[in-house]
Image 1 (spheres, rainbow, N blue to C red):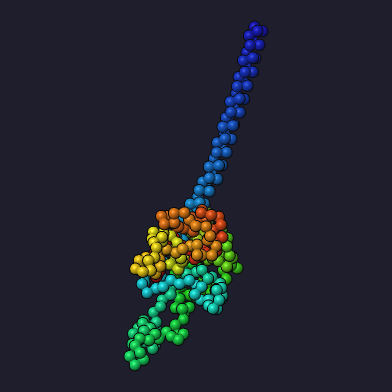
Image 2: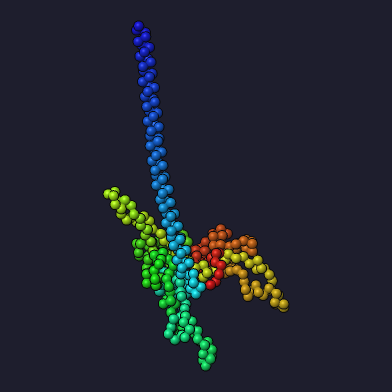
Length: 310
């Protein structure tokens, strides 16, 4: 009888240890699940924030495309750089323009009272020698003909008084963002600042009603590629020799098919097989890091995408 009691005690001790081990295992499993849940929640919040940012970026892109189509859709409209408003055009520097790299839209139609043909500045007077331009001297002011600047914060505005490239100093504005910075350009004067546009949404206030909150912002800047040197078209006839006796090959000089990038200050290292490969500012950097300074200096002057000069 005594031996049986000792055996039962041993079995009871084993059962207690096994129970405690199982409880510990279950505790570890529970902690693991809690940790996994926390990580999943954090990942979900991060994914949500990324998706929200992407949606705001898509919104900004769609608005930018809409503004571009609306303002530059009419054939008579002309895209110009704000640097055309340089207060001292006799120097190489752009003076008097805070946002020199904004793109403006100009409506060149003349609406002066002197012209008999509405919208046309040209009149024919044979006594004065044929056609004359009523905009000269000085009666046509580009700044007065600017419809708007194609940057965020200017969408839907009529006239140029909403955002003005000449006078608005957005660098000192807390509600603006630097959309082109040191990673792209080498000179602080080439930075581009634009307004951030707030997007709002209605959410529940917890009391059966709703309240309006700011759920994000977007910004965009449209740059005119038609005013840049296109270095992306290789000229397959660049090695054609000019025959001065017959004139063969002379069209290569009169009408070159490409822009020679190495005539641009700061671009020193050539690209192999230039005749067979499309050149971009990024490939210039890949050819040699020595070109990086020149690419950054000419960020607003080089393109590989433009398809017209209009």
